[in-house]
Image 1 (cartoon, rainbow, N blue to C red):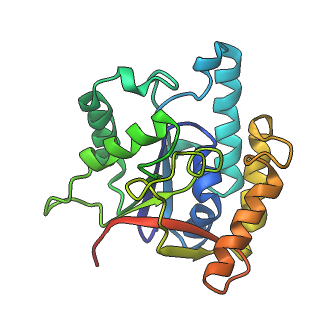
Image 2 (cartoon, one colour):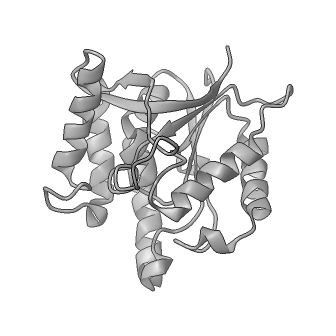
Length: 225
């Protein structure tokens, strides 16, 4: 029986692996149930229906690579790279329904200051849907970084990604890499930020921040014991 339920709420399929893939694999190895929400298909802005179907299959492959169940994936059909055309109430209510379904204790989602508009609005919708009321099942919300969005935003004190929670992922790096291979069509050639080399460099850098070989780093949005 799962120790706790963890929910990754992401704007697009691939964000979950780039931002927290090894950490989610670690949760699964520890006996937790890990569920996924994708707000958009990540492809419609490119005008490709076939691409949307391929991206969905890639999501199944990626989540399977880290040990998750296909039954624990929820795809919404909000407009890709156009979440700013959707009422926040609609976004939040969709997430609320998913939280009611999965009853997660821990949520991972986007950093509030990302360049990508879908990332920012997904973050806001999660916080709106998961207000820290007394009977909430959610005890912690963590923000992850996504290369080519988090670090590409205009730097300011207001939107800086400031990680304070670091997860040792050295034993789960191979699973993260295998999951990223499912999204190979989304990866780019180094020195692009969204390259395999850059993803590994970030893992090593975050690890070095806290004396680990590799780590994924998160901001703590809120957390209670």
